[in-house]
Length: 197
Length: 189
Image (cartoon, rainbow over all chains, first blue to last red; front, side):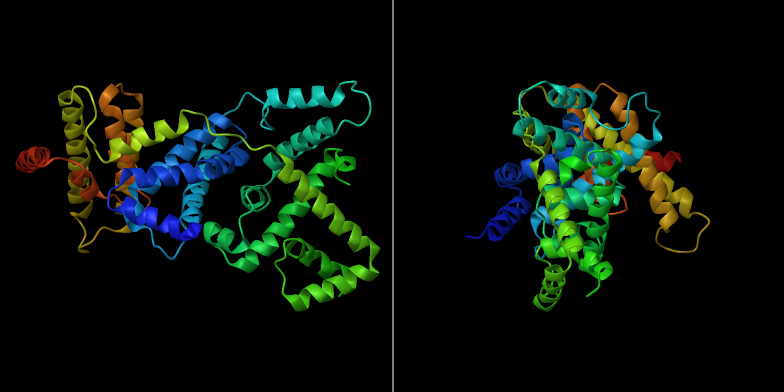
């Protein structure tokens, strides 16, 4: 059975109140949802809280799920809405810490990059690039960050992204193009351009 | 194809999201434009870098904690004493429903329209949100998951309050208790 059909079967069984079937959906999609939230928020604890909330909401509303949509698309739509709500609420709160990312991760990455390992160390370079990307992502608008995370981190198709973001496929193309260009400009501004040649 | 146009298309091109006709035009352009070739390479490198960022694994507690809350949502029998949480649950459900009913009566008193207006729906949602905030600061221990589940159900994503969902989570005796409480409130009110 194809994955989409298996999902549909699990959804139908969940609608009948079979908790175990929904548990299988949690198994299948916990990594996807948690990683999506993590890329958006930059914090594992918040990511898991939001992911759990997304599964709960999905379960509470499973009776209204329309089988013409993919379950994963629907789930990511819920996770996206919850994540954006959190980002907007956080923005309203005064912050005492640097908004650009986890200081611990940053320090580790900078230490690694600045360490006097001999020769070009691929791991260090990869970590350094990853850290720049993480920081640059935080500077993108919510829309651009969402679209980059969905496409480039999670490999979601343009059509599914259109469903998640409530826009047309053509809009996904233009937004993604602009988002990548903006990300590139941020990385260049961060003087990381030599790492992205 | 000119460079300006090509660059707008290159992002979709590297994802394989352009038509075959457009792909041919882009590739013809790339064959003769080194700047756009370089731009394409930088895009590919960017996407590769993004993909390289590590994934995280769900913590071991994630799934069990999620399933515990889901079981609470459908009120499967849980171990331990049931009376106090269920009473708290019934009281909160009464409160939610009572606030909704009273709010609806007050809000619709001066209006001729039979159904709630958008403003009224938002007002009701705000009441539930306020209730949720209050409950977050209360220590309801064993009953709290069930109570939260009611709030999640009530809030669920439809732009209005699904009071029926709240009632549906109660046992028939709790529903009777709720009806009596409401009748009393209506008589008093």
